[in-house]
Length: 311
Length: 260
Image (cartoon, each protein chain N blue to C red):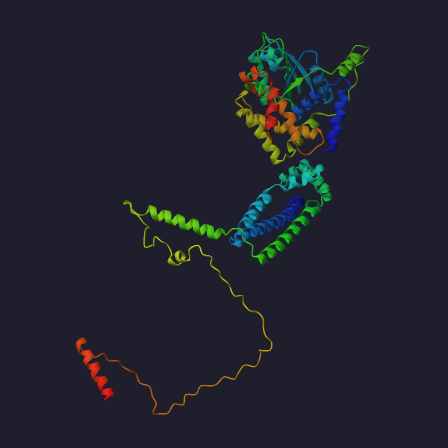
């Protein structure tokens, strides 16, 4: 298990050649990948969300594609479409795969796409396949969607419905770097800068194997019970929460805790894993009620309150 | 992973025996403490076994079903969460779990059973048991009794019975005491009144006078050597049917006959 820690430490170091700080962002993206899940990144523009994903795809030797969502984006722009191809004097329809046919898809500003286009992407996330016409095309595994959304400029956007947001394993909040990190960013990118060559540390097969190992990480019964009690508590806390998390959140929290344990070189899940991963797992699955908003509580405050109460 | 299952079984049996020993000691302390109190207040001392047995059963049950892995984790920090995860997944087999089992089996070698046996605490408990035993023996020689709860209970019972009897007296109100009880109570008690009664219980003489010890006298055998003419016959009493007015006359007749 210590080999896993060495591996991920090397990965962080390699990503660190390009990125300054944002270690939590990298860790949580890796957790989503190990859980074979998808992640929703929320943060202000200019926080290296796209850079992080692109760098990770390079280090992991994954095919990367980017979709810039706009209100006029059509589902076929994502999934692909049939085009007429002329060969040997004959014209045939040929399927032209869309950007979704990649291993790591960055759906930038997903809340700017129309619900119809969002649904097409979310279907690909869930089923790992795309249907065009009468034909179903399997997506290349491993397949991850990392969608970003901007907490500001909500006008003209289509916020993800709760049912669709639930399909993302994690909602990762991308914060500002601290002053020291910001000075390093300025030093690195505001001077003569040469793009560093990144080493490939993982490949598709490694990632699939790591995903299997993640599911094999054992978990103690009392920690499993704590996870379930936490999720149930979100449904029972009617004073602050309008809608709580579904059993999908229990599965997600268990898997995410296992992935974190594996990345830290442990072959068992600790209560600390659960407490840390509860925030990104539950953040987009809880809808606060008016009382919570009146008190000025954020979702993270309510999650902390629940974690404190559930022992 | 049979070897790990065996390790878990061994851990459980070792810790259960330690815990059981501690519970038995505690039960004895409870028994003797309650015994002491019961004997002072003249209750039946064997009633003290009830709380002791109840404690032994409840505490042992609670300890036996509790997770032994957590108990070890509290003493050995490096096994925290690891041991209980391994124990909970003892029957699971996959590369990650196998690696965990091997790691735990290696680390558990440093766990000593003696670390769960508090020598100071156990010595104190044994000392308490000895002190309690001596206290019980010492107090029994003093025949100390502060309050006789049995008498108190009997009085309560009597007054309760009287209350019940009064209530059961019928719908018609009547004066006096129900049943055949004398309204003045026991005659002997009434006569005694408030006078103090001196009762001396003669102590049993255990002294043996060595001088008075002698051989037992020979038993005289009883011989039935009656003459042949002596024999026993049944007697019969007759009651003559003499009228009462003539009885005096008959009496006078025999009197004169005797004088004459």
